[in-house]
Image (cartoon, rainbow, N blue to C red):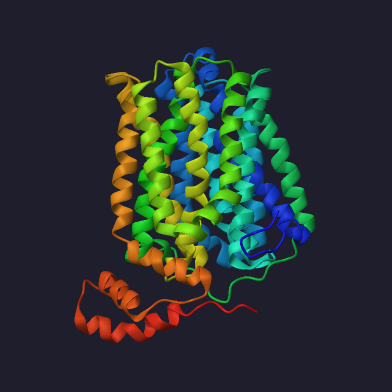
Length: 434
């Protein structure tokens, strides 16, 4: 398998594989609990809205902690930050398995989210710095790990959950302990950054329109995505192992289209048209789920098919965020992660309340509307996505595109455009191909 840069994804340093394996296990945690949601609701006598807090506590804490990851990493170094995150996940996933109440699991999932934030924000930077194949190849490798983790999570959760609802939590603890050991042994000591990141850097970064536009788009997309992930299992009325196989099929499509489909679509149509198409298709699928919630086969088909657009969106959005952000990549990753995970965390809880007050159709329809609004937000940054394509192909950006982007950033003030055009030329220079 080759990356977009033409370098085999398998010809990587051992350290890259160690971090990538940890990424797989980390992303397994997103879909791991999906097959056991109905079992948790029944065995712990909790409502679906209460069970949805497993997503909310995990993702909201991940989002808030993202604001501090750069501050931590710039002081203790990326390797120590990775190790700290992995160790926290091991401890809290094991504690969640030992818990006997839904409130206890929700609380331990919050601690899990803290470790997840430290790991996620740092792992991408480490892979980009260590992987062969350049920036595009590193992103594809990262998304391959994400896709594999998302695919394996529900299957592992279903297999272990078929034994006991505690099984998936203990399974993650064991796998993360292995990933922790591999990271300690295989990843060389990483130097601390030359400059320390301030606590307020991620929030300041969101003042840049390009980063804010992509972040809000991701928040609205994640609203629909986590509504589906958190609530689609209930109307399916399947066993844990059956749910595991449904979401395994979904995850395989996520992995395939993240690694193979997204780069090909991007090369043929460009980033913006590919994202518009993926988000539009996802909104249509969510609407169909909302309309045919009671039709099991239709629900299953729509959920599995959504893996296509989730994979495309994940890869292209990650690339675009890293390319259009006028700040350091760790800061951009933290700011972007903060906004998008807030949407993912709040969506399952809001969906639960909507389902309780109306019916189970309404959350999915609201999720579809959120994704449509996300498309509208993304369209306001069409020019910056064109620049991202230019940077990816190494052709740079035209004066008109640069001036237009500066006008967007500075409200169209002629003086600002003149003053910033030379600075923008430096930022838009085509990346070297050494």
